[in-house]
Length: 354
Image (cartoon, rainbow, N blue to C red; front, top):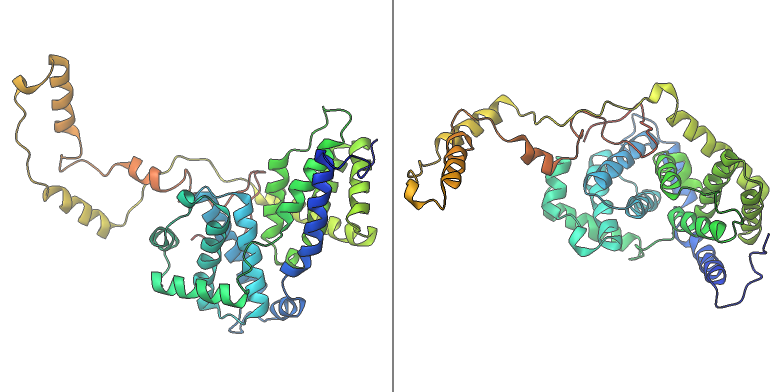
C-alpha cells in the first residue's frame, strides 16, 4: 500500500493531506466551550435553563428543517455547531430556544447554500409555527454573530469525513471496496442529535464513523489506510477507541427494533374545522365567470376540455381544497410521520413534532 505522504506536490493526495492539516489546525477554534457544555449537562429538568434533552429536541427540529427545505448535510452540521457553541457561551432560557434554533439554521443556510436555496424569514417562521416575529429572528441572528465573533464558517466533522473518505478511496487498490459517503453522512446526523457528541473533536468523530464502517466491510486494505490517516491526524488510540464505542452504541440504538421506521403514507392535508369553514366560504365568494362560447375555442376537443375544467375545478363550491398545494409545501409524510427520519432508516423514539 502506498504511503499517504509519498506523493508529488501536484497530485490529489497531497492536496487532500494539505487540506486535512489546515483543518486540524483550525478545529479547536470552533469547538464549544467545555465548561459551558458541563454546565448544560448538570442542568436539572426543573431549572429555567436549556438541558441536554431540550438541546437534542432542538437539533431534531434542525434536522427536520434541513430535510424540509432540501438543505445539505453540511448546513445541518454547521447549524448544530453554531447552536452548541452559542449554548456553551451564553445561558439560554428554554423559551428563547425556538428562536435560537431557527436563527442558527438560517445563518448556516446563508453560509453554505446557494442564495436561491436559502429559505426566507417568513417561510421559516410559518413552517416552524413559532410565535416570534421576523424582527425577533433578525435580532437573534445578530446576537449569535456577535457572540461567535462572526466566525460562522466553522470546521466540522462533515469536512473531515469528506476528506478522510476521499483520501481512503484514493489509496484503495481494489476498487470494488467502497465506503458509501451518503451512509456516513446519515450516521453523522444521527450522532449530531445526541448532546454527548458535542464534546468530541470533529476529526475524531469523523474517523470513528469511518473506522466502524471499515470494520463492517472487513477490508484489510481499508483498515491499513485508516491507521495511516489516524497517524497523520495525530489521533491517539485511546481517543479513537473511546469515541468509536460511543458512536457504535449510538448507531445501535437508532437501528434497534424499538426505533422502527414510520409508515411511508401519502400526505393528507388535514385542516381544522375553523380553517375548513373559512376555506369553504372563500369558494362562495369567488365571482361567477361568464360562459365561454364554443365559437371562441380553437377546436372541438379544446372546447370540451375547457368546459370540463370550468365545471369541476376549483370554481365549484362543493369541491374540497386541492391536496397537491399542500404536497408542494410539505414533504411527503411530513404531517403523519415523525418529524425527522435519517437516510439509514433510523428514528428517534422521542421525536417531537414541530
